[in-house]
Image (cartoon, rainbow, N blue to C red; front, side, top):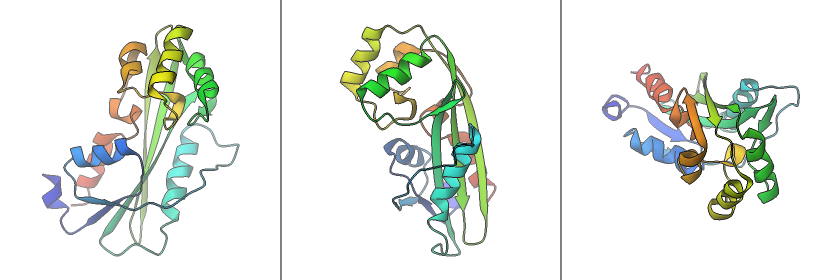
Amino acid sequence: MLREKLQKYKIILASGSPRRQQFFKDLDLDFEIRLKEIEEIYPPELKAVEITDYLAELKAKAFEGELKENEILVTSDTIVWHQNKALGKPKNAEEAFTMIKSMSNTTHEVITSVCFKTSDSSTLLHDITKVTFNDLSDEAILYYIENYKPYDKAGAYGIQEWFGFMAVAKVEGSYTNVMGLPTAKVYDFLTTLV
């Protein structure tokens, strides 16, 4: 439906995330993938949504001056915000275990910011989903890390995997946001362009 309406635009997804790429396919959008290496470093005083807003915009700024008039660049960043700190992607099994263990039997926030950039404008939106974990045994956490190796995921877990089915007690807000993209908000924004 939206594909026809956006025919005069070229959508560029600047994300290497297989989940975000699949969402764009599942939303039935025509798009191309353009990637740039970005060092994802943000000022230490930033908190929660300020971090994801900053990083989504940082990724978009890398394309400054390169976009044609009909192109819409989409960049995105997701963090897990827990106990007043950002949990990014774990570097190793030990870090993954510490992250997941800290979220056991508590509620955390998954925050995603999305930046839509054209040759002459930039729009930022974000979404926050609250996720509550069950009380998790060390054995279950170790099994997950060993078998699913969640090193490419913020907060060291994928809600769409075995872990999500077993560990998640409650989700308040967008489920797809927890996977890395608030698809309904993205779709709604794109409909405002036509």
